[in-house]
Image 1 (cartoon, rainbow, N blue to C red):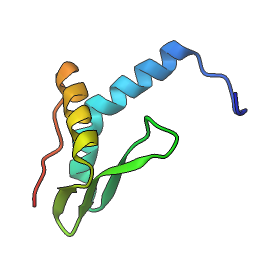
Image 2 (image 1 turned 45 degrees about the vertical axis):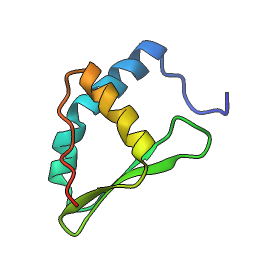
Image 3 (image 1 turned 120 degrees about the vertical axis):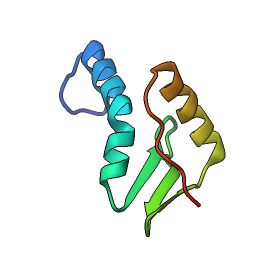
Length: 81
């Protein structure tokens, strides 16, 4: 609705699922990362990885992500404190 190019809904869903399936692998490969919950108009930081540790910034967003990953039987990123 705001412009851009057309990508069919089926392709968007396939890419989203694949991204979630690979999330933990990508997370492990990064030295620093920020994961955003973009389900609303104002994306919220959910996880931050820096200095060798991952911390939860938004517990609600993290719980939702864990449920989604569990439903896909995808590996969950490791949380360190």
